Image (cartoon, rainbow over all chains, first blue to last red; front, side, top):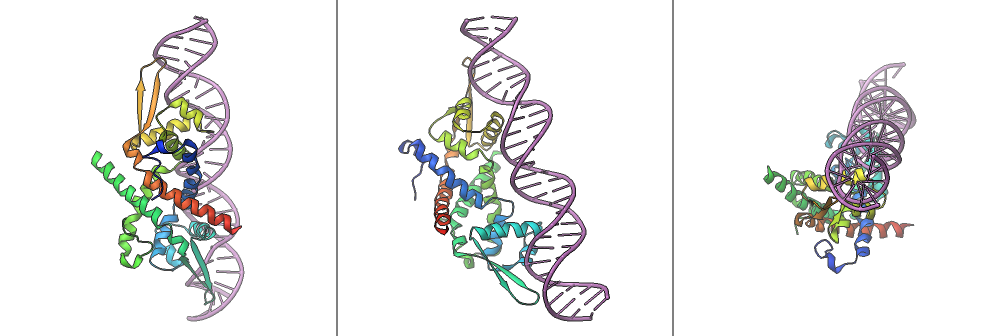
Length: 123
Length: 123
DNA sequence: GTAACCGATATACCAAAGTATACCGATATA
DNA sequence: TATATCGGTATACTTTGGTATATCGGTTAC
């Protein structure tokens, strides 16, 4: 595991910590937006077509689905493939690079679970 | 390490994956907002007073600093202590619970660094 | 009494993010 | 000719997030 700068700050200079800010913000940016995570999770269990995603992700509009998929595609987390069936079908899939988000997502999930428990215990 | 559901989806049911959504979103929510991370990082190297944070974090307004600190305090990531010096001084510190964010932040940083490199290589 | 310090808060404004709803182009089927 | 499918886009709107700027309350020093 990489250096633990929150629990051992004394071993790291202030500038070294600050250098972490931008990459962390980049990663957060990639996951930002209300629908990125639902989309990624929907794509985990296999490729999906636009309409399937639209049906599966409750509440999302076509506009947002299209927009968020485009952003995921730009970051090469998701691949878009057009098949010239009739009518046309468009398939979305998580790229191998997309699956590298797993460590981040699991770290977030583990902390999130503990946090939910903490909030619950407080009541 | 916890189960890796992005790279081994076949081993997990769809519902099990979906259960991850809320905790992940909770964790992201705690870090959301333009100034949470800068504040956390500023507090890593020691407790800071309001004015010190204001000076150190370039561009932040008193309103946002106050608001974000309050949110961090509600989530018990940061502790606020008032000393009745004259004039009054208020000290903010990262709680032990706050430092448990380290794994999340490091996972984000590591992925973010790789992502920056990937974007760079593409040009 | 008035200016200054700290730790904010109040008000007004602006910009980004998200929603609702209608519609498009291409093709097929009735 | 009309209607339906798929995969979206266009326009207008609302909501949320963030900024700018002025001000407050309590206290001391001048």
